[in-house]
Amino acid sequence: MKSWYLIYSKPKEEKLAKEHLERQGYETYLPLVLGRIKKRGRTQRSIQPMFPRYLFIYLSDQTDDWGPIRSTIGVSNLVKFGMAPAKVPENLIIRLKENEADEGYHDLPSKKLKKGDQILIIEGPFEGYEATLFSQNAEDRVVVLLNIAEKYIKVQLNQSLIEKTT
Image (cartoon, rainbow, N blue to C red; front, side, top):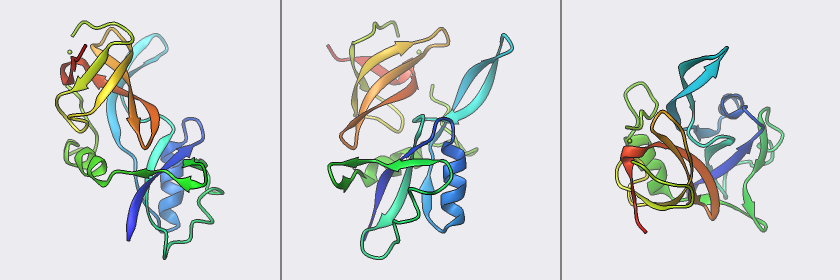
């Protein structure tokens, strides 16, 4: 039986890690989000990883060879807790994939909040998950700390997808 696991990539090498893992026959998933970056003083739209430095890999602990994963170009490590690799809930991957636009990325749809606020994600691929507001920017985007696979990960969302819980 296969499960989804979490790969930690080298900085800004998520796409490279995905490409090289897939060349070796592994099934991977790298959720992408439409965002904005500043280049030469101008703000441009760009497609970026939803979880910087993380991607998912679908593996069987019975039949797949896990050996080459760590030495794959772009991969830093397989995320583990103790000696066990961190399993990711299947329903999270399903929801992420279901909420992608036809182009293969998430265009996350804006609220006034402050750092540290507890929030509930009310729409989109993370609907029903609770998180902590980490930061926000001028384009109505927020960064929240989401607990996935027993680890807090920064996720960038549009403010209209969240509501304050406390």
